[in-house]
Image (tube, rainbow, N blue to C red; front, side):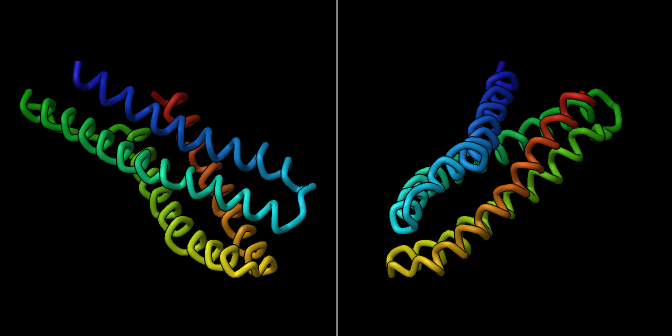
Length: 156
């Protein structure tokens, strides 16, 4: 029962994170391009501040539940007298998931900080540059997230 609950929390956190990136990258950003830079960048800053706060919690849930599920299966396997060999799809998921968390950390704690300073200073050129960097790294993470989901479903 607890494994099912943790797996559900894990999947819901991934859906929130990857789905949010897809929404922001594919729908929100293109839709606000008609707005003037100050309005557009302030809006994106407000949206991202809320989204990144939520993603921070989602990454913690994904990491904690993923590690717990791997650990539980490994423990049960060893207790049964068998050797634990982590499946390839789990290895890919865990490795790329950690990479995604590291990229998110860079986005949230370096790029978004730069973006915030620029928006607060009404430096729209710097804010636009910072936003472009955030967008590029979000696209990388979005591609990694979709790849992980596809590999997990195809191999699992």
